[in-house]
Length: 111
Image (tube, rainbow, N blue to C red):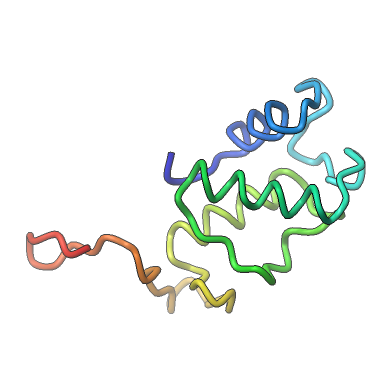
C-alpha cells in the first residue's frame, strides 16, 4: 500500500487500536475515539509502516480534533509529494517529489 484511502485508515485504526469499525466514519475525530497524543504517535508509526510514506513530525492535520478523512487526505498529499519530508505544505502547482520517490525521466526510472 503506497497511499491511504479513508477506508484503509478505518481498517488500520480498527485493527491496531481494537475499535469497532461501526464507530469509525470519515467525520469521526480521534478525540471522539479517546485517542491521546501517544496513540496518535502510534497511529503515525502504523501509517508509515503500512504505506511507506514518511509523515512529518509536525504535520498540523494529525491531532485529536482531526477526522479520519482529514488524516487520510493529508497522507495522500504527502504520498503525492505535495508535502515534503520537512512538513512544509506547498501549493499544488509547486509540489515536489519526496526524496525517496521514484521519478520517471525520459523513459528511465530513477530511484
